[in-house]
Length: 315
Image 1 (cartoon, rainbow, N blue to C red):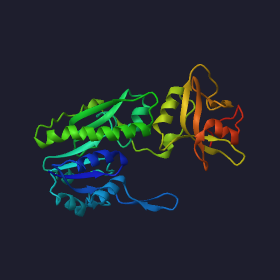
Image 2 (image 1 turned 135 degrees about the vertical axis):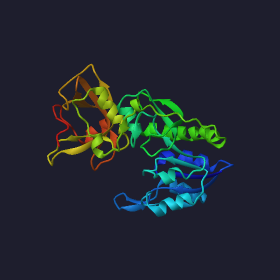
Image 3 (image 1 turned 135 degrees about the horizontal axis):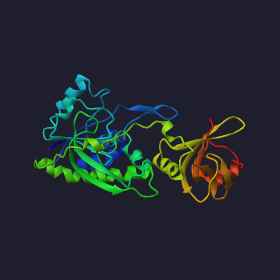
Image 4 (image 1 turned 90 degrees about the vertical axis):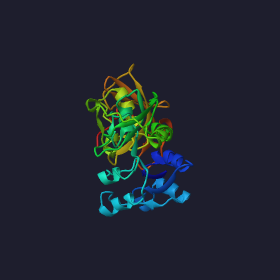
């Protein structure tokens, strides 16, 4: 069968790699976002999907706008039997959705209809969900609204981070595609409509999503810190003579047996920075001051003493 893979984010790499290794499948193209400037030097950076495609000799398409007539024509001309999409980054027009002779499948990193949208991994952790997973669905014109082919769930661990769940779901996506593929090939793939009454959305993240609100409970603060690790990273602001400096937080422990005013440093010692929160406190264990490297809180305090009573969060 002829297949097209559409993706940009690293989460799609294991599924793309599985597809490339399928003997009965010819991957005729990879469609990914245009190269973008990144880093301090703003050098052009290619997506992980493009890198793998080039390595394997697969033609790459990088339309600026997938809705442009010439971009649609390029995809239609590929005469794909199946189009597989994961973390591509653009809404696909109806003509592209219909371009797969057998199916246009999306691998989505949540248990739909919960957490449609761009940031389902972080949303699931921050909400305290017990599980996440991969949904294989038949794509429709709405945002993650298509009929479900299959679901593969995984528990969310108590110490789960956005990064660890992302990496695990990437591997699960490949297994889910492997399970769905023969069903599509022999025409037995199920189509289960989503329950619209259970649908909710996880909007695209910005850096502001990482800002810590010390009035929240210790558990809520801990979940935000874990959800936003590694990006956009939870953060607060540390007073300094030159003005507030951003302090990123990558790991912490929620405590309910000790409490203090929200945002106030209660203790700063070898165990870390203990900060008051709503109904408890949070012990910051892994931090990064703007312009400095990431380090454990004990080492941070050796070079940047913080006095008890310091109030975090004011900008």
